[in-house]
Amino acid sequence: MRIYGDLVSGNCLKVKWTCDHLRLAYEWVDIDIMQSESRTPVFLAKNPFGQVPVVAFDDGRHLAQSNAIVLYLADGSDLVPADPFLRAKVLEWMFWEQYSHEPYVAVCRFQMKYQGKRADERDPDKVARGVNALETLENALADQPFLVGSELSAADIALVAYTRVAEEGGFDLSGFPHVRSWIGNCDTVLKLSE
Picture 1: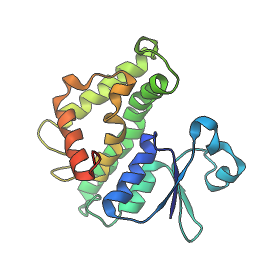
Picture 2: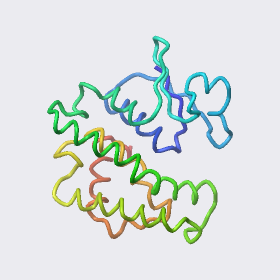
Picture 3: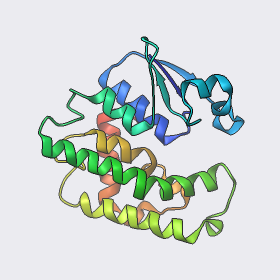
Picture 4: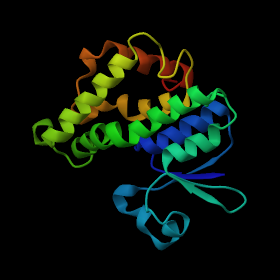
């Protein structure tokens, strides 16, 4: 399979980390979103949404949206629990990530890192909602090392991608010890520091 993505994108890294963790073979194809490479006719034929990541499978099918790709690739592995309730908890976190975390934490990062905005130029509503998302994670991780129990799941991969670089968006993680510990746990299991 080929993964079309941008290695500065947390959404793309989710897919890469899932493949690496599960030892799935892939070819990485760099797409520079800042140069509008995801808006070309060739790319839009693969993904009409014009976003990265997108996976092209050997049979000619394509799949977009990071969390959908992660779930597809991880199906049948330890990253997606067999128990229906625990599987639903993984999905609950992944849906929450796209609705209540990524639009705030990742967007503030994009504004600062790629648009050159200062922390005081960020949208105050996005900042407040980003802090709320980090507080939600902090509370959820107070008594467990991962989001759904004691093992890494697809939910952790979905949420750690932008949380681990939240400081690039002006969020101070020093007041979130459980989040910092969880990031370390994810880094260890996914071998992200190597």
